[in-house]
Image (cartoon, rainbow, N blue to C red; front, top):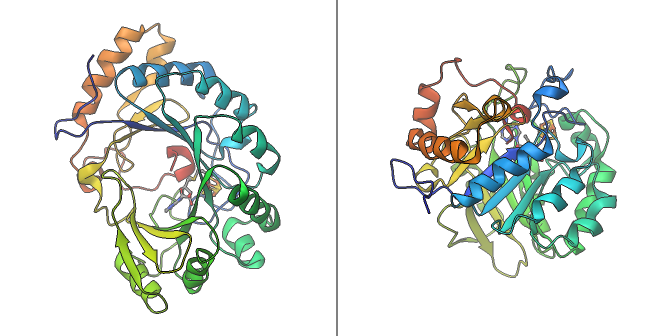
Length: 330
Ligand code: SAM
Ligand code: SF4
C-alpha cells in the first residue's frame, strides 16, 4: 500500500482538520473584536465529505486526526460527527482542540467514544477578568468547569496557553503550579501573527527560551523525552503529577520531524501552518473525483511539503501571514 512520504522522508501520519470557521469567542490573538467574515455554509466541507477525506488519508497511512476550528463544538452535531469518524477502523486516535465554553454537557458522551483520546483545552488566564479581556467573552466560569470535568474524566487533557506579552506572562508560574496536583499537561504556545489582519501588535516575542527562563525562576525542570513528532518540548517537575510543555510555534524548531498536514473547513489542503494553501479538495471532490483520484492527489501533494515553516512562509503567494487561526485550524 502506498504511504504518504514527503521529499524529506517524513511520514505523514497526522491530519488536522478544521470542522468550521465559526467561533463563539473572539480571542485577541486570533481574530479582530468584530470577528472575521465567515464563509457561506455551502462552502464548508460537509461531515460526509470530511469522513471521506479522512478515510482516504487513513488508507494512505494517516493514523490520527485532530479536530479543530474555529470552535468545533459550534458546528451543529459535531458529537454525531465524532461518532461517525469512530467507525473508521484505520483511525487510531481522534483528538480535539476546543475552547471548552460549549462542551461540559457533552463530556460523558465523548468519554464513551473509544477513539477519542486527547482533548486540548485552550485557557489563557486563570483570572476571570483577564480571560474576558483576552477572549472578549465572559465565559471563564464555564471554561473552568469544563477543565475540572475533563480533569476527572478518562480523557487525556492538555491545556493550551498562548503566551501573550502584556497580558498573561505573569501567570506562567500559576499555570505551572496547577501541575502539582492535577494530572494535566500544560503547554505554553509561542504567539504567532495569525490574528485576522494585524489587530494585535505583539510588544515582545515570548520565545521558548524566554518562557522556559520564566518557569525556571520558580521551578527546577527536567526535560522529558517526547515522541519524535511532538509539537512541544516537554518537562517534568519533581513531585508534580502533571507535566509542562512549550510549543515553539513561531520559532519553528520542530519542523524536521513534522508528520502533519492540514485541511481547512473549506477543504483547502495545507502542508504547513505557514503555507497559504496548496489545493482545494472540496472542489475536487464536488467535481466527482474518485477515491483513487484522491489518493493519487494526496501522494503528489505531500511531495511539495516544504522543509520547514520559514520556507513555507517565504513561498507564500498571498503575502505575509495574517489570516486568522480560526480559518486555518490551529
Ligand atoms: N477554538 C478552539 C480553541 O481555541 O481551542 C480551536 C481552534 S484554535 C485556532 C486552536 C489553537 O490555536 C488554540 O489553542 C489557540 O489558542 C491557538 N491559537 C490561535 N491563534 C493563535 C496565534 N495567533 N498564535 C498562537 N496560537 C494561536
Ligand atoms: Fe475561537 Fe479558538 Fe480563535 Fe479563540 S483561538 S477565537 S476560541 S478559534
